[in-house]
Image 1 (tube, helix red, strand yellow):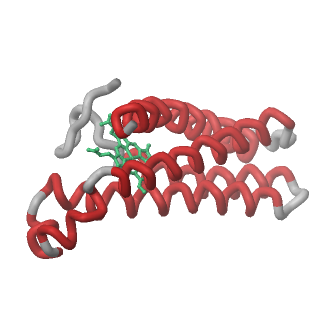
Image 2: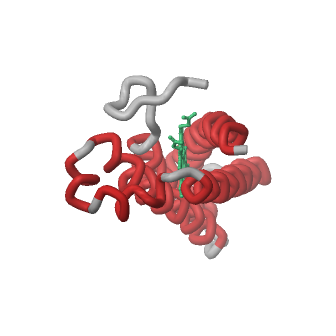
Length: 151
Ligand code: HEM
């Protein structure tokens, strides 16, 4: 069960990375090119929103089915903060990802709140870039200090 969820969580990362980059590219193009907000723009933002929320649910399941939620009570906050690996799983990954997903959600909501296309694109650009910075920095890439394989 844990292994299956972990593989799904691992692979879903690529959907989120691709959708975030695509959403940012389309939003910046629409913002600076004075484009019209089309159904395809809404679809990309919707798929991004759905995959991010699915990833949140799987991440929370991994956190509680596995032993990650016990790290702080088991080792104490001081020990956790001293160890790169423990700090990454107990604090950094979960905090950055939850914030990143909240910012994606806010970006979608804020874009929907206006009928002016340029403002929709501008809001999406800003929120999605912020979310991407947080999420990309907290993925355990093969080159990160806390590394995990590509697949
Ligand atoms: C956009 C959001 C997220 C992305 C892109 C992401 C990405 C990843 C990746 C690539 C891994 C390594 C998978 C592997 O080893 O095969 C991982 C592991 C993990 N993530 Fe996430 N994650 C996200 C959100 C979350 C959230 C919100 C939580 C918790 C609430 C979470 C909890 C975990 C846990 C517990 C592990 C497993 C660590 C282990 O078993 O060693 N993730 N994540």
